[in-house]
Image (cartoon, rainbow, N blue to C red; front, side):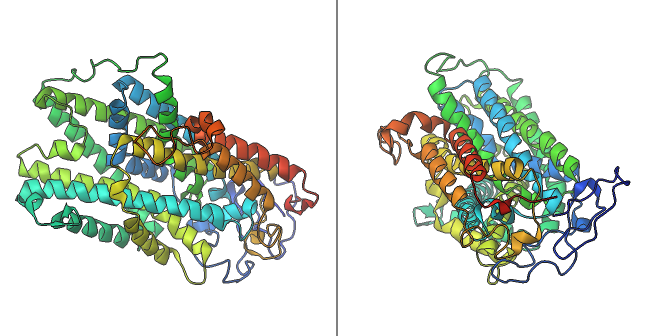
Length: 522
């Protein structure tokens, strides 16, 4: 396949274009197929899965930074620090854990995001290069399932926030008759919020970009207003910041730190897979690298610190720490303040849930059945599945939320990330046959559309990552000594184990392939 020629090498003559080869002369080594060169096979192609034309790849550094600011500033992110403190950490240990996790997860985020600006393809199409044209549905459906669950969790939390604030404004909402264990007014808030989310994403990715551009600064302002309000009432911060760690820095700390670190990594490991869904609209590699680097680790760390400062102020004012920002905002009697808090909760939760948990499964489900499912239908399916998984059950305790849910998810997604990184960066050196990603019988067809090397690497990495999953007695679904007892010591490092094992095994298996057609020639 002919790679795009860099503009600074004009003395090298361009090769004549042929069917399926990219257009040359594009900036920053970006690849684009001439019109009509992608096979119109409805089993593999629809308009949402085709490469984004170069003229439509215009997301800037600000767009990517705003995307991350909008996604990071949400209620579950705020509650991450509280979950770690509830497990015995002090505020310094909690903020350090969150900061380190987001620096670590940024690396695979940037590596997998590279294919977006270069080729304009979404995650499930990129996965075709490693898993095969049919096999790509395996990681796509795993990612879609995780996103659907996250969508349900965020929608439930957002609905709860609206319910609490409306009850404070109008009164009587909490005393409504109970349906299914909850007041019917809470279910109403949940459904209305669900409809609003799907209405926005139904308008497409350009509408999402515009929404994130103004949502990011608005949510920052809302968080700073909350900080200023509680600081004035408290007359300063201090009580919570002075509380010592229950774990110390010795033997009791590390058994909590490492699974918590993996859980914090897993919080964004979903995006480390499907970040090409966004970077495919990028104006270039610099835009996505700078935007993500500025947006993710800094925002998450500052937001965790902000949550600790605000909670410290609540301790001084109310005699006990109030970790939930919605519950804290509800303590004011100022109607304007309550309405402002309501709008902030709406915007913050919409911002993260639409971007992080609807875009990916919409593309993933479209990849499963391109003829029947487009981006909009995939978004609607996501919304339905997100309700069916009963998200209110997943956030009941820190043990279930951080160790079981996030740990298990992180192990599996780390395994997929290892295969994608190994294939794109080590095996192919970032060179793909773009038309071949849509062509049966082409270089990524392997054996009936499946790459046995990727499936084996995923199976081995997945078992190593989550096979030792265990729960404390009476606090989780797994046996106390692990599903596979001799793998129990690896369970606390599930994401790292899955990524490393699958990356090494996949690279070794592909290096031994007798059929070398998967290697593109210049």
